[in-house]
Structures are given as C-alpha cells and as structure tokens.
Amino acid sequence: MSILDTSQPPPNARKIEALKPDLLLTQEHHMCPGCGEPLAVRQFLETIQELGATQRAVAVAGIGCYTSFSATMDIDLVQALHGRAPSLATGVKRMLPDSLVFTLQGDGDMVNEGLQEVIHTAARGERITCILLNNGVFGETGGHMPATSVLGQRTKNSLDGRDAEYHGYPVLIGDLISRLQGASYVARGSVHNAGAVARTKKMFRRAFEHQLAGDGFSFVEVLTMCPTGWFVPTADGPGYMQETLGEVHVMGELKADGRIRTTEELHAENVAKQAEVEARLASGGLHD
Image 1 (cartoon, rainbow, N blue to C red):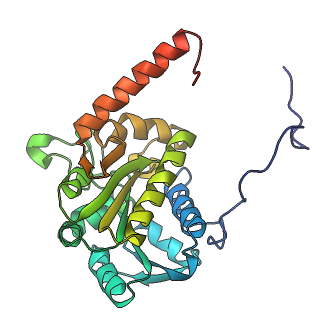
Image 2 (cartoon, rainbow, N blue to C red):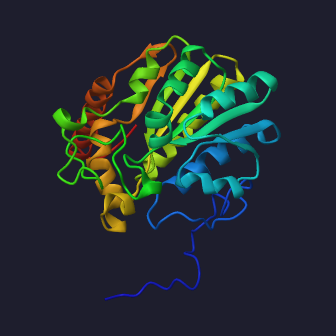
Image 3 (cartoon, rainbow, N blue to C red):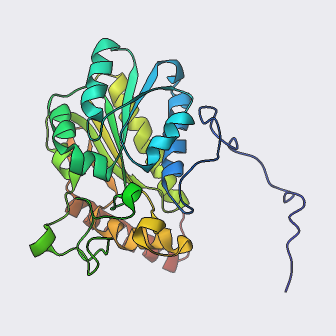
C-alpha cells in the first residue's frame, strides 16, 4: 500500500481561491461537524465581494444556528425577531435604496415562523434578496420537524417519519414565491457536493444582480446538511441530504428570465440531463 507524501503540495498544484473570503473574519464557527451552512455563507460573501458591493451590503439575520455568523461576517448586519427578517429588510432597503440588502434565514425561521413575511415581501416586489438555508429540521432546538421536512423523514417529533395525513405535506416555498409577480428570480441550490456549491454560487450572483438592477424580489433557497439534527453520522450528511430533501426540494432555477418552472419540471429536466450524461459517458466520454 503506497503512502502519499503530503509534506509538500503536488508538483502541478496551484492555488485558485483564497483560504477564506475577505468578508469572513474567521473560519472558526459554532456549527456542528458536517453542517452545510458555513459553505453557503462563504459562497454569498465571495459573491458580494466579486460584485464590488462590500461597502453597501446589509444583512438581516433571522433566528437559528446561523445567527452566530453575525459575529464573523465583515458587513453591516441587523438582527431581526424570529421570522421577521423580510419586513425588517424592506425597511432597510427603502431607507437605503442603493444598498444590497439580503436576509439570512433558516427553514424554521422563514417557512414556519415567518411565512407571511416572505410571501408578502415577494408579492410587493421589494428589491431585496432572501436567502433560505433549508435543512429540513429546526436545528437550533435539536431536530424538530418544520414545514419543509419531507414525507417519511424522521425528526425529533416525527420518530416514525413525517406523515401527510397527520402532519400535512411539506411546503415547497420556492414554488409559492415563483408564482408571485413581484418575484424576479427564484432558485434552489445545495451544498452537498462541489458541483452543487458552484451552481449555488451562480444563483447568488444572479439573485444579487437582479436586486442591483432594480428588477424586484429575488430568492435563493440552499439545501444544507444537518447530520446532528437528522441523527445520522457526519460523513453520511451529503448523501442523506440528496436522498431525502433533494428528492423533494429539487434543485434548479424556478423563475429566471420571466420563465416559471415547477419543482416537477426541474425534476424531469434533471433526470433527462443525468440520462444524457450517462449515455455520453457510455459512448466514450464527455466531449463538447
């Protein structure tokens, strides 16, 4: 068995990204091992800097595990009450119309405590961006069931799995917002692998660009891992996320360039793309 020498970088290695974004004060955080939220935070902070919007960015944080990032993000930030971040962000944007204003919320904060806030903010076409970190559980309270957990998903208060007759169906918040005329861009990404992280960063950029162009409300949902709240081993988090949340809250752009697509349509498109990739691999590889 060969042992790789890691005392020096490989001969052809090159650094392509900074160790951390300039807007992230420290890489240390209070999240549990395997949490996906730090990945999402890194992506939107990098995007803000790349857009040259650092000096006019204002975050409005909701209540959840991610609230601890308030102390590590080097941008102006306002703390909102549980679920009320979109309304507070509306006030910030109206007072500072040239600012890049965004909310940072979890699924419990946005889809349970504050569903009416984000819906009405989108319906008014407020020129802000709402970011949803969706892990399908109330992570801060130890893994209770929120509105976004999927059927069959075990949580602290649905030990036999979410049951539609007893608990109701999961709320696909992206689909709801995409139907509102005030929403200009709606997307759902994830951070369960490198490709998904890269695609999610592009979604952040498009959402912020829509806001800066004055197009209206923009929304990015990010599926994140929470192995502690899911009661699964840390290393199983990405796979569990893809097989549970990812099968229902399907990733892709739900509203872009005026076109609305349902989650079902995204699923069909993703299946078709996967079949195409597999066919090209079988015939000799991926060649443009």
